Image (tube, rainbow, N blue to C red; front, side, top):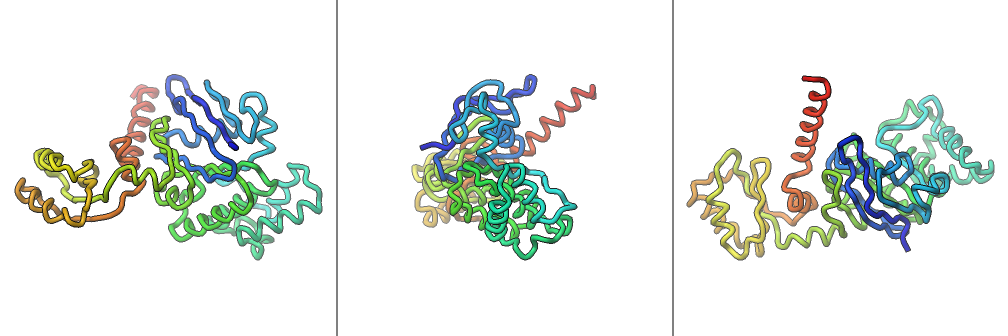
Length: 330
């Protein structure tokens, strides 16, 4: 059974296509990730599925309801944690939860019990009666997760839930998201953090420039590359002939270049390093460092898009700046 069905969903803003005919299904109880750079179309997709935006074309169902004709039913069935904080800083944590639960017409006794449950889930019971303006960024994120769960939604949307948090706090938020599986809720999470998608998600859709370019479990996506990755640091060097030579070896399954590095997907990689270094010396390539590792979702993204997420974000930011300059006549 599916909690979400998406077919050819498209969103255009004027001449700009933010989401381009994407299709996917999410199983009930699944933690499904939309992984991609800022500006890839992740948040726009979430806004369409949560009925905050009407799609230009295409169709989707959430919790069995149409996003086109059953908006109220969907809104009663979902929870959302937005990128930007949406808490009332002048209320306590408990008061924020109380106010939100009242919007869903929960009885006083039901509200009290549920607030206790979600505060325990995100470990904020001892901080419940403190004003939210005195919460840390991580505490606010945890409270927003609790608020998103207060009405027992069938589907929970988490839009970049750890954006702007330090690494330690991010890890703690991951633990709380993992706990939500006990709530029997389907989760769609958007992120541009590779390790976040890898650690949390049952399946991941990699989205770039409004299109889904790959979709599978994190393990299957990484395994699809074949072999381990040898990363050579060779900044600002002409390596065309060196790369051409490497492509002639059957144990080299793929080559990509980015940020002053050459990444080689290699079978029996640990045994191939001496040969690769020998070839580099033959072609006068100065290798500043060598790193051997298992494939990551970053490698998968690079394989399907030709760029790293960081490079793609820089490219998209530059495109947006050019469009803005044209609009302003600059």
